[in-house]
Image: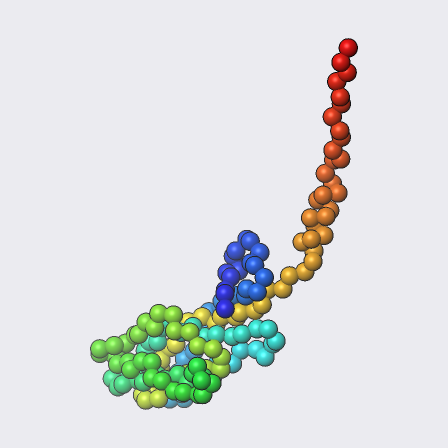
Amino acid sequence: MNFVDDESSETPPKGESKLESFLFNCELSSKVPFYTFQGDEEEDVEHFLELRTVCLGEGAKEESNVVEVTAMNHLGKTTSVPIANLHVKCLPMVSLGEFELKAPVTIRLKAGTGPVFVSGLHLIASEVEYSDQSGEEDEEEEEELPAVKPAKKKKNH
């Protein structure tokens, strides 16, 4: 799948997708131990969660805080994977780079009491639709051009 940034001034070639990105964050704790990212149920739109950082919040205890994600693998089966094991004294934050998962995704505080903050981007990929207006504009531009007049022939005396 090809993605095109919103800021691009050119119209992307047919068959490409438009990509929009929004900030994402959630807080996990013993009171709220999981968060499920769904996205909308629109046609021709795909939602992705790009996780960037997982970090302990203020007031975290001296304990291991294990964060895991549950998402679909390439075979279409749901699988759970630990992505961070945080501790106040030795590893209070983990940078995940651009860890991208297709919705739905569940982020769970598997061990510890938190608070743990997970941040990243909510990506929305949609098919770019084209109308026939571009062809009509070309025709209009052609109509506005002045007509070409034939050159005058010189008379030989």
